[in-house]
Image (cartoon, rainbow over all chains, first blue to last red; front, side, top):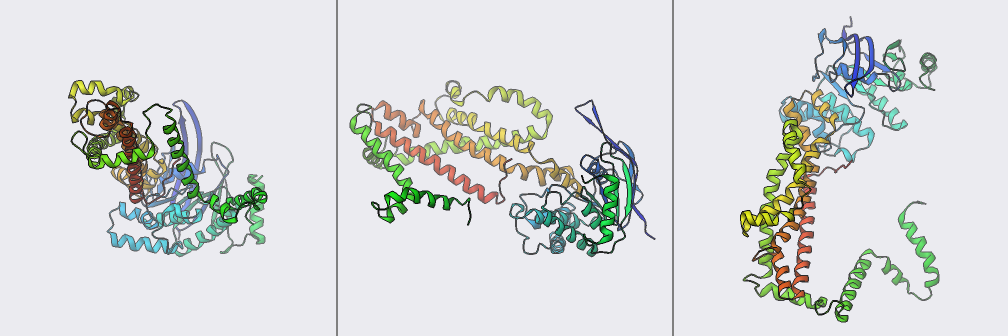
Length: 253
Length: 286
């Protein structure tokens, strides 16, 4: 029934620093993501998870292996994959509307049409009334909403999120996680979400893939999260799974 | 209660000082003394009194006019021509040179800086020569400029360009080099081409730095025109200063200096106003 959207086959990455020094960042990652599935890649810092996401995005080239999207090999960045960055990376000289309409604008969509698209996604992320605000006038959580809206407005088939809430305070982060689920349930996409936070992973994912805690990044285990949404952080089965993951990964020390 | 509020601190401090003084000072006076603009006025007034004092005591001999004499002489220069021109016309002569030299500097300097930053070959060719010439003060070119171009307009504009082009090049170059590389990733992810990266990211992101360079250029140009006019000019603010020396008329010199300072200040204010208009987003200096 469900088809495989993203397939990683033996993806590995070796960075060469200062011409000679080799850094082995990723080793033999095999990974499947089904269409409209929400997959979380969980790993501590320095586990190669962001590198993996950048390879799937097409911003980095894999040293070994390959990434397939709908059976076609990924050769570079393309609008079919939307990326939400760890840092907000908004264009400071553009308003919220200007940032969100950027994707359609680059593809040459006429103004009226792309403004409608942008307005739709600004509404979806709950930023009505802030269309003409500049990024410096927004709080951290609002900036990342703009980042999400900008990625969505380009109508990608796959959403890649690279620790998008890492810079937010705990409360805003929790709220943004709820929002992420709401947005995803409103407009389903295949999502690959990278985080170092166990609670975030369990709250969001259909499936959690953990990476080993040191370089080179290797896949450790996969957890299926069968809890109904919206999930509760204090739910017994939530805590059970959390305990299980901590036991195995010793992530949270 | 907000502990770190400066207003609170001021009040507590003035309370401590005020305790003893309260009996002697009427309450409104301590209020007046806390007003920023009142203090500004006191500062200026004290400066003028000190100046007047020095003039009356003849610390610098006969060559120190009193403030009122300078103001009177400025009034005279507004209507009585010096070397065929009144003061506003001399100012206009200097400003014209500044605008011509400044415009040429921006038109050449900004593109050169942009090309150096965008193309490593252009950078490798231009940078060594630029680094060699950059530390030479523009004023040191005056003699050569006069030998090459005579004492006409060309040599003065040349000196301005030598000075004003440097900040244009440096800031355009650095502005582009310091663009956040992740913004390029954003455009690439959204499906942008190389050309769109340059138009949608490089230029707007570098714009505040380029504009800051243009601002510095303008003030450098204003300094350079005066230096250039000190040598062999028949009009301009620099000429007035030299004329004042030759005629032993210090009121003319100090009056000219005041006009020069005021003009520089007005130029700076109008450019920063222009900046607020063309860059409504916050400037982020990292």
